Length: 308
Image 1 (tube, rainbow, N blue to C red):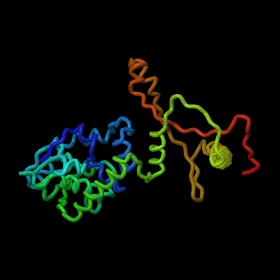
Image 2: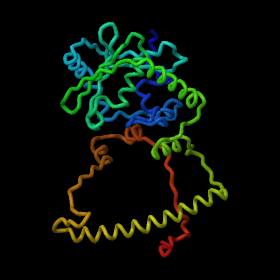
Image 3: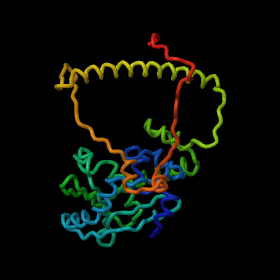
């Protein structure tokens, strides 16, 4: 069985954890996100507090699952390629194995999205473990160990040959259709569209050109909409300020609405960094930049509020 170094695998194949995204069922990433990472446009991955907690608690949860399921599970850190690599560009890093690797284990720390687990492992977890088993010929089942809040839940996902064949065919098709061909998949959300657009833009050394007729039409429509939105936002802000003044001494409840005042704390992280002794070079090192799109009206044109 082929074992592939983690760095190499991330560059030339799909990880089992990425499979749910290309099928459009992951709540954490989209097919566009996976494509950007595979063609080198995804940027640096930032570890979230949830990711950190999941990594640190992986082995303790695995030990709990071993006792609960009555199966000796050992932690795993190796990455396994599909037996037909590189024709099938799929790899997996299960969290653990049972005896003789006939059982694999996947650990999940569920800090939110509790409803996803109301009927067992959600589809995005099932797809991940099915993809993992596809990379391990001896694996007949997977134990999913989920710490949901403070409750440990264990589930068994059995290997399904027909489902696996379809999954592998779709993985291979997606890889060659988009990654090999360097053609971006259709974005599945507005946020994905913006991430794709930002990744394709060169910010430095830009020049300005005259708009084409189609671009002029689109810009004029957007300008009209922007003026209307700006006018409505000013109206809304004025009403909010009037209600805020009226609610200075007590909260107010109306039919279908309410207003109240709450304490809000803002942290000046720049000041914190300065007082802690962070140098400008250190701040610069951890400053992330990305392309930002801006639409604005020409300074000589004033909004026509009477047209709203």
